[in-house]
Length: 387
Ligand SMILES: *Cc1c(COP(=O)(O)O)cnc(C)c1O
Image (cartoon, rainbow, N blue to C red):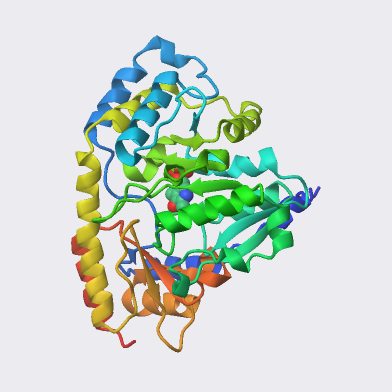
């Protein structure tokens, strides 16, 4: 018997990395020691005080029950405290915060709450693939907003045709940006909030890297006037506290938009394990030193890699935020052929920009999730290949 998958599955973008995976496997079999800059998952451990909070919380019988859908009030209060402390944004913990099983979960469910078949969703390209795939699963139509280097990797809102803007239901944005490392300043945030208010579009901002910054402070979109009318902001403990495996995040902003998302979630999941939420409280209300320590580690790695890339003549900007480096591909290559060259000749694995959308072409992404000694070795290997 053969069961056809639903059309919405067939419409998902194809997986582009099968050939690359096979090449990697072969290199490993040949005994090559691959330096993998492909994974956007911190190599650093979760801070100890968070792990200890989890251990204690696991012992409590009351945590063995189903949690509430929207999350413990104490966790949501910790989120409000964190936003006040880090962004100067005041949140009503009862109405303006919900708990998520990772921000990916919330992002993926948002279109189910607001998109009817055929509705347009504005998605950045290059971008985190979930914006487009969740739109497709909700039977909406992703409309590409190119993020170009000459625009500082911000979308050109004027380039969105009026009829598209009027029909759009959601706009996804992500700053500090994965993969381009672009950042959004207040002027742009104001402009995009106004654009979404004028066109009655939900502005879904993914702030997963809001705290991974270097001598720079990333703004919450909720800092600008009137943002609470249209903004839902996703944020996560994953990258800030090295907790990707724990699956805990949150959404903040407009209470009605949050309620729509929660409506979907109450029909699909049953919340986050309370012990994990208690660990999350320890993270969010704990010392900010853990964030600063992380960032100083990423900064050292960034500087070593950037210097190495620039020394061999590659075009790359110094990122203000995120743990990525978005590097231009040299002449004569595209992102896939350059990735293969790095793997074949230097045993270095990066992510080809085209994996994040057609406008990612011409770039490769390095994730700074390797020890500085490993990055130094990678730089040495790069010096020995001709580019
Ligand atoms: C890592 C990442 C996320 C997902 O984080 P989780 O909270 O672990 O689901 C969301 N958006 C972007 C852009 C990311 O890079």
